[in-house]
Length: 403
Image (tube, rainbow, N blue to C red; front, side, top):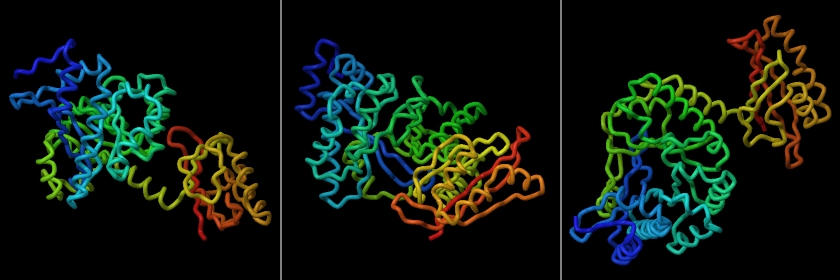
């Protein structure tokens, strides 16, 4: 290759390459883990030299990061992606969401969400077609700064994914606090064919907590059928890797989208390969759809915590604390004629005594005051079990609106 990139000439060469359109967006598709249909793609920068060869990203990306020029490349890639998507919409071609990488250096930019929206709106694109991808290294930036950075993008109507999770800088605290919507699992966690029990346990745990945090999961660098088969059992949402497709130029990706459908490298029935983790996730999904309020309580120790709380009549319920105080709070939201009934039904001493007598289920229907000032009927059911690791009586509360 004739192109020689070094620290001294990187800035000049970058501007020349952008001006001549020698930096191209290559698209690596993402596929649904179960149906194998294309659900999205990641835009990747490829620098084409004057001989037509592709300069390795490893040769120029670190230099751009080091010199602070990576932000120039990121904005260019976003513009190129928007242009591609606009052309697709204009031609009636099937389109998918494309993620564009933004360096951690963008965290110092003010009103980043507004700037992204301004560029995307200039092409008349729905915001759902653009996803902003930040590397896990961005999490090394001060917590409040990266949280504000991600929130600005989310407030502008764009999804945000955290790339390379598990590559070495992982922080569960940041994952908990950063309002991202997608978690991309680094390929380093997929060594071999997931034959190691420890590796499988780690991956299952990651997908479990991501699911509980309502994060969409994408596994990167998937190359073998064995890896794909295992990821399906974990409830992984999307797959990105050579098993399906390598990064490709605009023409090839456009052709792929025109024939978007099932691309199945020996798909297996998920029910035949499913693990306990994925089965639990499926069951929880069903329960949460049916019951917007789910509480786990330890009656013996007078404590509780909220497992799910969505679209219920009242939004004021505390998330954790003392069980007897929870019942007092719940009774206070009831119709005056139902308060005593609710308090008596879920009296902690009476429930413990009833459990000893063999009672395992207790249900009551009351009228609860909603945040809109309207009373609605709510059905609350407690299911009683023993803690498998201690002699404690637990109550699993499932509650739903019934009118």
